[in-house]
Image (tube, rainbow, N blue to C red):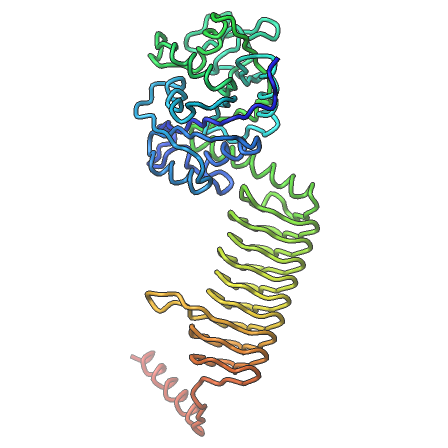
Length: 454
């Protein structure tokens, strides 16, 4: 009996080209819920608090490695220069795991739906068996490898292309995931040959090799949906639909109201607090947190932002990365906010752009206001204090600051700092020309009539 508290490491296979995707992008970098497929595998395994994570890269390895490290800079990437099969791929991780005394779980970068508790059950089964394989009852076994069982003992795994008719009749299929002692697995993989229909080194040969040594192998079952692999764009679209369906149900179960759930789209890390109201046709990109009782009105797009409690956004608003809305802030329709903090109770009314700015609590930003933050080379910041009233159609030319309680006149172009309590007017004086409007209009109408007579 082995201890179930042994450390574990992850080996994630992400070297395949994915030719059926018909894409220049490596298959594992295609997005699901706003994150690359490989990140979903990394997240599932991360729940086990692994002592190490090794990602085997190959096709587009530099791009895959960049994405892996962007998500987890502690992960180790190793290269499979030639794609010679799954057994060969796992063996590339041997150097990174040298001296590691613990279990390893083999995952796949294109299999995003494996549950955390399923991986935990695999590790628990290691208490009684040397090799643990994850299997499932397939509705259409087809191309899947078959798990040949004798009671709870796994005798061998047979690839479909190498199987006999009797073996093809077995519905219990191989997901590809495997758990084993790290040193034992690498030792067994060193014995794997390539005498098969594909001429590849199969990870699936490990259970039979283990049995030949008197080691014990078993298979535990999971729902078939967890084992869904992504090989084509159609399968990617189907996986996205499944992902969105699950996230919508989760959001509502956690206390959010989705008026038209089928029109709301989530990212892998979207968080909605209790009693959040989401109207139809809202898209959440990665990195969004919405606190309790906030309202996201229809046709909004949010990404990389934080929405405070009881805040209101939209309709037709866009919150870009770095947008931070305080409690009870209000963002009107057709407003865009980027890299800006909107203070508690502040209002940014319709048709405004607020970028690289700080808006103090209780301030009112009039319709059509723009923070002119870019000079063609550098970005500059606008600072608006508390309880400031910015008149409609004001251009705030950064860098500029408005003190607490300041005001700007509508249509102003503000290029200098405004002290607290001051009113700033930055527009040309209006001049009225008596009767000129009527005379000019009459002349234009006469010109139009003359052209019609030609």
